[in-house]
Image (tube, rainbow over the protein chains, first blue to last red):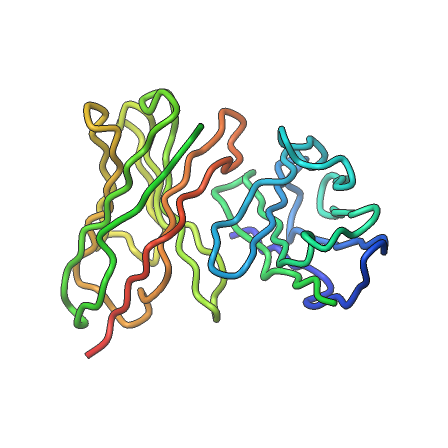
Length: 105
Length: 118
């Protein structure tokens, strides 16, 4: 199985900050990577797929990059609505998720 | 707009059975693979099973193989998960989700809680 490791597990930030979350795959997944945002009690929401393609309707302050085994999600300027938990997911070989990064104030 | 609404969760004893349903709307159901994913505070998000649009391709995670059965009924735009021989470790929120044409999961339901406990 492909393991996905996110860092950090928790990130303390303020409104307006630029934040970056890293996701590493245990083997190459090309660019078959998605990022999701989840708020408490809600379903995950797709933000980015194919490592860097922004899902329709997602604000442009979100961006993704990377290929192979190392990927990043960047929020260029945190909005109050962005405080949530973020997950990466590989879909190169079945589906596996990272353990999540909680972005908190 | 795309909507996925799960039902059927609840409390069940170890060894028992439960059937989850997912009502889909806002898209051509038979055009998409569908999947069940579960989430726990300890193990996080875990893929459980998926089924192709025509139901001719079905896969299960090793943790549920032989105990869970995924199915779909296009006439009712519905997805199902029959869960038998339930274990305490199957306790989770179960999400129904749509698989986009590129393989990413693009829409999720709100989830239904399954609790396996004596």
